[in-house]
Image 1 (spheres, helix red, strand yellow):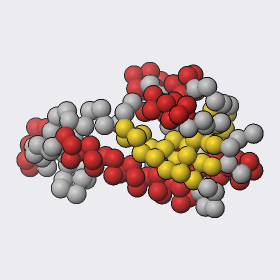
Image 2 (image 1 turned 90 degrees about the vertical axis):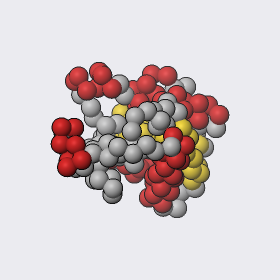
Image 3 (image 1 turned 180 degrees about the vertical axis):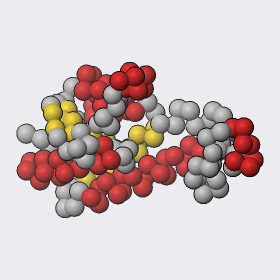
Image 4 (image 1 turned 90 degrees about the horizontal axis):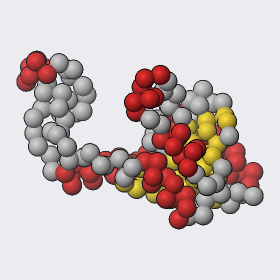
Length: 172
C-alpha cells in the first residue's frame, strides 16, 4: 500500500515526534522513507547577520539599546555564505533523522524554498504514497499570524497526510 513515505523534518520536537510513527509504518509496509528538510532561505540575505548574538550564536540581549555592551553584532555576512550555512544545517538534520529511523531504508534530501510548497513538490516528483509530519502546536494569534506548514500540506497534498502532535498523538 505504501512504498514511499515522506517525512519532512526541521529537527524540532514536533517533527521528531513523528519519527516513531514513520518507522513503524515503513517497517510494516517495507517502504522507503524520504527524509526531507526544507531550508527556508528566502530571507537569508535580509538584514545583518547575527544581530544580538554572541560569536557562538548564543543570544545575549533582546534590547537593541544595549548596543555593543549587550552583544549586538553588526557584521555583514555574504548572502551565499549564509544560505550555504542554512543548507549545511539541514544536512545535519536529515542525517540525524535518518539515523533515528534505524534499519528502515531511507533517502535524504535538503531543499530550499517555501517549506509547504517544497514539500508538496517533492511528494509529487517522488511519487510519495503517504506524508507523515509533526505539528508544532501553535495556537491562537501566533498560529493565525505565522500559519502552519503542516496545515497547508494537509489541505493541499494529493497523498494522505498523517500528522503527529508533539505529545505523540496522531490524526489523519
